[in-house]
Image 1 (tube, rainbow, N blue to C red):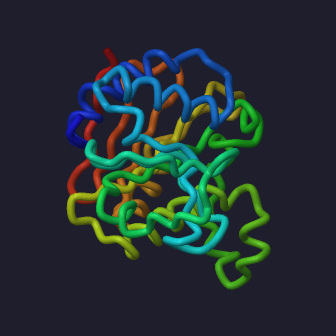
Image 2: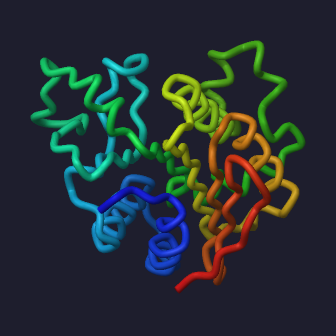
Length: 221
């Protein structure tokens, strides 16, 4: 299927979030469910990759949760089992790369996850001068993942490519993001050339903060 991010937002994500609603699971399972819905939406298996091997593209250890390529690509780039590290395929990946997605949210964050980011220092600016401490602080995880997407955006450019931060806010005692928190992270994503997709469990719609332009609320299907 020819890659079209606007159709993913309008036609695939509304069904994806409807299926996800009520599930208390892990980020890995949320990525698998998104993979499934992309296939249902017409994408072919060879153009979707989870945990892509990236040592030949960016620094070691930086693996996006899910990547979408052009439909013409044919390869196996996942970071597990028989991933062929002797074949870099660097130029092939660059030529066909169309979308990089990071997913944040899951049952392991039920008590201390997205709802915890109601702190005043939402973007962890106070720890910015201490990268090591910042990387080990749970409350900084959102900003760090957005910056990781920003690194991809800077490295490969935004021409016909999209970088997406998908925040899944599960039901938890701390509540969902209030609008000012959502707006803060939406603006931070835009600063880095990244789309923010935010879904709060139980809602009948989700928010799309594009990398350029105004936020849009999209109804589930």
